[in-house]
Image (cartoon, rainbow, N blue to C red; front, side, top):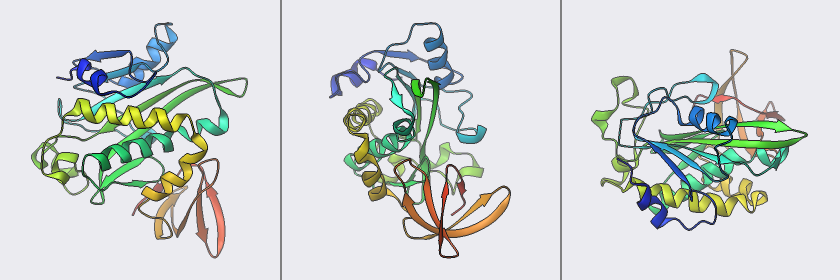
Length: 253
């Protein structure tokens, strides 16, 4: 079980994680966060966390698997208004915060655009942000994070054996989930104060910068060179010596 007092003891934040709602089991932390917002019970910086997420979801409706009581499944509520442009940088800032935390714990993470966290070229975590706009400002943002921390190879189904990993597998020792959570939130709060610095930091962790990638566009398989991201967080991909911008694609390799 997650001990919320241990998270807060290790926090170095002014707002994030100061209020934590823990659930032993939950369908989706993002859905619970959205319900708390709509009912007026949410606070800025509130963290929703569970030991067992039953119906975890990823980008484009994909499901997310995590062994109960082994990883981190949580959603952060941001009620502070952000511009549309800055809102697009929140997932990137979250990826940087997670990567910095994993580095702190002895791992060598890479990010895969737009929202995957990799260790040893296998998926270790993902990010799903949901928001609502009002008058060109974001009324709220829910930052959903799923991170494999203490899973063993035996915890993953056969279909994910060669695709998924955990911090424990890569560092060969178990990690206190509460400490990892606190480090992520502490880094993220710093990044939220200076979102303009996020792109350069994200590129430092990018595992496919200036490399040839394959991706799907409208069911068509394409290849190009990933040249980075622009100020709006869009991917810049060179195809036939021309740069094309993408809001969202699924990189296959």
